[in-house]
Length: 433
Image 1 (cartoon, rainbow, N blue to C red):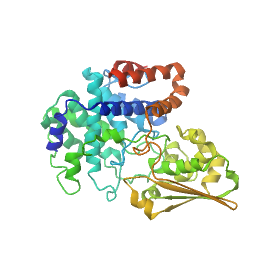
Image 2: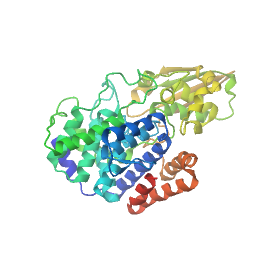
Image 3: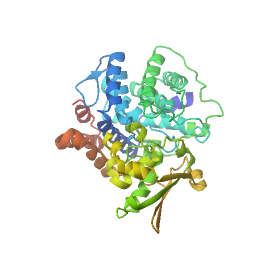
Image 4: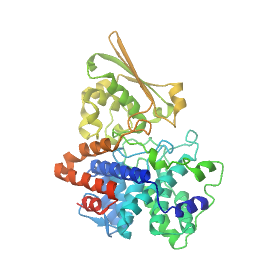
């Protein structure tokens, strides 16, 4: 832990491409939060956070409310992750953005930090969190929930932004790791709840850990010093490349493990008469079989973890129905009928590619016609990336129905200011509306 903390405090600048990558993850997080802002879980998180952590100077995004650092970070994290539109990283098998971005932007307000400082802090938070997550054997651990490691990234990012020394940051990361939300249930046994991967809870935990360390509270500094973690990854990360540069982005508001089958079913084309389809075979990797995969999910949260439902929805309604998913989709009987025709199986070759990749293959059978499509890297992966224009298009599609054309244009203009001259105040102004 000490070595990682010394690496954190040694960072004074980052290459231009890392700053650009940081702006990309900010843009994606803002779009995800716009989509999730009005959902029941996000509203409940705002109210509860204000009651628990109280007032302060930090913006609770897209409201007229403000709160303490913990209040804003928790509330904004929940809005960002609740629809499963937030970014992720293949090496971590989890989602750094919904924790790191809201926490750093809130901390930047309390510290009056520059845009460049905030972007560097975000890059550092990604690096630390993903290093810790990637240093595990992802095929062997019981759960991949992001809450287990995102708080350590938050503690590092905010500690760097505050100018804490290596000892304080090491203690903060150790505390955050020791009391991370481990969750007593498996990932998907409780279907349709708002807890999901415990990202907001890990975020709040990272902030609490930093505050404790600042007051002299001690954590287990040897928490990473055993065989469960790969020392080379902890020390060297991704070699010469920052992990934030290979972040993946999600075009659909559902579990990333379902995106390859969705891309595949969309590639089959629009000329299929889905009423005539007798079967859709989805071949995937083993971990996808652990999702709830309900034919008739009763909530958006349950639907996000159903391969048959999401594949059928994309087939019948196109990609837009998952950008983002809405309650109305849950009552579409055409989707239910087609979802019942989906058969899932594990393909050994595809299974061997996980967790480095999340591939899928779809075979559609109708009459005498059989069409198969294979996707090894779904849209948004580092190997099949979404560029800046595509990220802004994603944000626009989400934002215009919610903020209107003028409001959306202001958000995009503010993000461009952050991207071109590292000016953060226009974005903070938009988020406060």
